[in-house]
Image 1 (tube, rainbow, N blue to C red):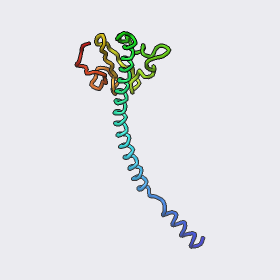
Image 2 (image 1 turned 135 degrees about the vertical axis):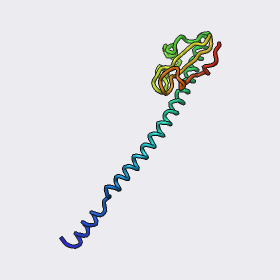
Image 3 (image 1 turned 45 degrees about the horizontal axis):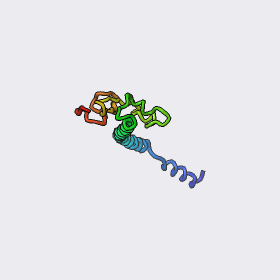
Image 4 (image 1 turned 180 degrees about the vertical axis):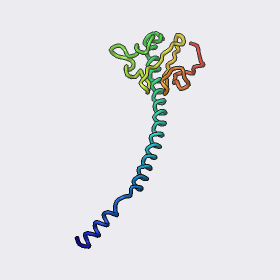
Length: 139
């Protein structure tokens, strides 16, 4: 082996990364990934809440349409909105952003409450999402 070949081998051996440099790079990538996942989770929660609020508005509009077509009578269940040859709303649109059914409650002859269980997926907790203020009652 001549001098030139030996220099090329030594240069190639020095060109790689040390174990410490690789470990530092992996740690930095791990920290950045952890931060990104945390922020994405927070934004997903907000996006699901907004989507559910919009879905409640869509279903509320469908209920109003049903009332116009049925002498101001409220439907007995939300499933009525999806029935027939020309449904008011598609069957798959009766679920919140977490894939759960909405709770439908008549509050009189013309008023109703439509509620999602929210992010914790349990009804009756502080994160429930509804079309009305729960303190208001009446027709």
